[in-house]
Image (cartoon, rainbow, N blue to C red; front, side, top):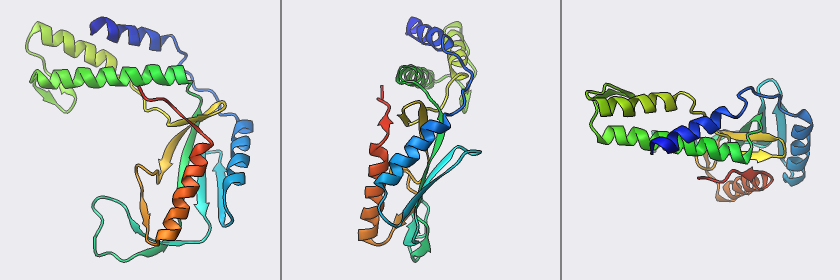
Length: 199
């Protein structure tokens, strides 16, 4: 396990850490591709300063909050149906796989430390013996470089779900027909992107 973890760290350090600018030419190509897929009554926009790509149904829909603690007796309200991505510099599939493996290794090491009943506060451990101190030291070295990863890539840019993804919805459209339309539009946009393979 130790050699595997150190191999991952060494490989990660081999990648440059500086962020490159996002290619506006590629963003324009993606916007054109998305517009070609959108039905009438939908639009897409990109805010370069925030690297925020947003798809919106122009006509408001009756919807309810999809959050876990929502009031069950709440009535549907007219709101805009929006979903959005944050555009980030490209993370290559190889680098994504490497970072994903590192994240998995950190999670596994954390779970091992928890199973060993080492005293802790959140993710800070207080080891009592030499063996636990070594494991905690490995964990401390590994947990610093952990990064969140984008969900997709398109040519030389990467994208992260930023708002109202299918796995983390913010609103639930009340009308079945309109909900199906919104789901179909999300699927059409996602099909233009390449999803990273999970490890």
